[in-house]
Length: 389
Length: 248
Image (tube, rainbow over all chains, first blue to last red; front, top):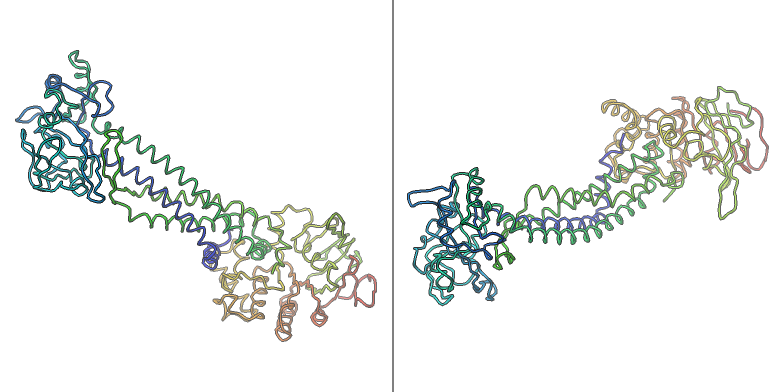
């Protein structure tokens, strides 16, 4: 039978000053680990939320982002006739769009940061039906009016309802604030596509992408096959969700690797702290260990007992680390989306899965840090250790 | 009956033959025990005396399966322990040996009850059976009302009583006492010795005890001296060599 767990619990409590070094080390490591991953998760979630499963994005063949895309009005007309597109009384639900990057001053620092300005068609709210006008109204086509995402409105100076702005040589009136459900659109400014083309001095018949609303997610393949096999078109078709997921890949990979490297370096430190704590535990409790061995507890029981103790300490560290980063959940931050060169606001996303991973990471550190001291405990010369003072 | 001439019968509870123990220190070999013989019957109470470094504790460690001899054999209740593997020896200790240490060796973070219960965790007894055994053992040593206290809340004499309760709770074949009164005042030492005597007289326990104290040794049935690696009977000054059929 194993050495009772209560022995380890009370030993940790009795030697808390020694254990606290390891607890802090592990807590810090787990905190950074979770924070970095939650950053990546939040960024990805924000972008993925921008896509709808029943929307498809049409761009010039070979384009990897809207910024590089180009699709003519003639092509858009051909696309509108493709099968699988949802229609309403006004016709096919297609929004041909142009995007530009305009600097706006940040409220926090006063310095400029790039904001993605998207020229949209009048159908846009029926195509991206999760976007709701929270204040004011939707923009009128043909007018220099803008609606602003809720994050953009609270991040940049002047993007408040009723304000008149001057950019790209034109005056713009903020007529509405929209809520895009935490997606990347919340960081955008929307205006009428032809008006934006005009002020950016771009050809009126060229857009950068067209987003179509399908009758159902299952209609995607039929639509894609029809469009990509049409000899009049030279376009790529991608599900909107896949497009945004792909956009998030570079940043999430970068932050995950960076987080992994930082957490690994910190983990080495935390493991050494754990080693130190457990080695001192073994050194201080040599006589207790020898007594247990003399009473008949085997070497394996001692190894398990000290591993359990190391895991107990690391679990506490893991729990503290989780608790410490929990307030970050939902906290909004911003970074450059390197696909669009514009600022993207997103929130830390701490999920139960991440917390469990953090605790598992902590336990792994505990096992690694506790193994050698546990083996040393089991190998103590019993007869000698029994007489230690 | 205790014998040290190696002529004891096979019915002896503890039979030691030709026991050698050699240590290496700085390249030099130190022979602590040299062909030691011993026979102890069930219910015997033996005290081992001798100057520091004479090998008393080494002998106790070998008898308790905490160390292995360089040569010779130790047989307890028919089991020869000298060739047992480490894990077998550990199991054997749990079943056959009750240890009483000079410094008590109680686990400070466990209560008296939990300390006494430790050896029983290695048995198949249920929780309620364990409780009964622990309460009985603590009752025997007169500490039934202190079972919830931690070692730091007990006096030295009480701590040693808890150690004795832990040693007897699993009803081992014999008890090994290493200077059981070495850390106690005279009054507490007397009480502990009275308790050990009671264990022998009333419960038929076999006790092997190491002590420096002649007063304590006098409480045993037989006192043996370790001199030059072998056991001799009588006082150290008499230098009387091994007697066949030494008094028990």
